[in-house]
Image 1 (cartoon, rainbow, N blue to C red):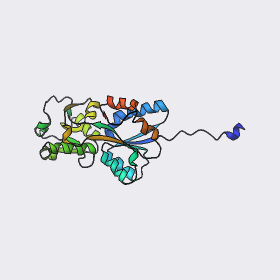
Image 2 (image 1 turned 180 degrees about the vertical axis):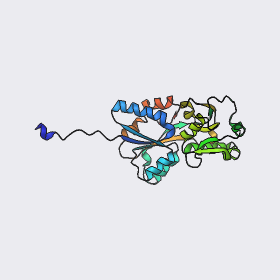
Image 3 (image 1 turned 120 degrees about the horizontal axis):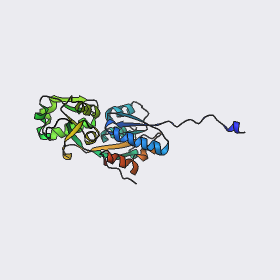
Image 4 (image 1 turned 180 degrees about the horizontal axis):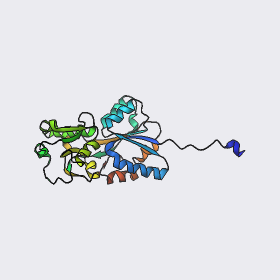
Length: 240
């Protein structure tokens, strides 16, 4: 009787596949580890620029949850019927920062940016595709600095790559998120850009309607909020 009921070894559930903007890595690694410890469910995290991840989803990538650094990419997926509007939650906010290598003690602020470059490169994510680069270009344009610096910009595939250029001393200045500056000891915060100089930096989370609803819900929990807040993110979602 027992032999008849036994159907073989129990197979572990497939891990939740999460596509996330690379600027979330430090915080989201911690949130995922916390979720796994609390639930026993596995989370697979795939980091890249929001634009690249959105295009992968458009091409059929089987993501369960998508965290974007820009609402526009999620809106694009909604418009294509790949995400339901009701399954999108504005989760986090961030600030835009100018950073320099930690060993550089100069006090030049944003207004002195063209002179502070001194012939060097300004590290930025792709200014026409990656959210951090888009916000950065908006801010520099609003402040009247873009014409003076655009020929000196070193564009990278994502904001982490721009941060790395500054951390390694390969660029004297970079435009990244404030949370990046907090997480990387090899850079120092020069200044925060005025919030009114660019669109609000918002991170929506989208559930793609397959697996992963438990993790989608957990991202909106007080436990996850504590991790995100400790890593420097602002909290947008209405928490229970």
